[in-house]
Amino acid sequence: MPHMYILICADGSFYVGSTMDLERRLNEHQAGEGAQYTFRRLPVQLAYCEEYERVTDAFAREKQVQNWSRAKRIALIEGRADQIKSNMR
Image (tube, rainbow, N blue to C red; front, top):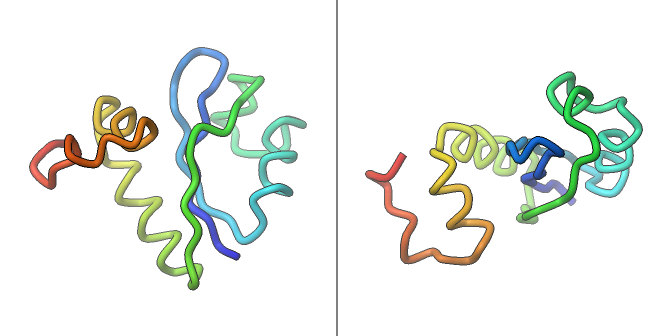
């Protein structure tokens, strides 16, 4: 199933991605075979994920969350949906 996911990197930064195989992709990140961004910030830890029916939906959600502020990403990770507003970047 397609997923959108958020990783917490060793330096405290976030990485947002999408994949068809979450377990495989997480293993790739941990092995330094993922994105160049995470390669330089190992180890990484899965902080959040959402499952989708279609890969296009997971990719669209990835792009949406990538444009969010750190505060908004933290609210999503912590399940504080009431603090996630469309005008909050």
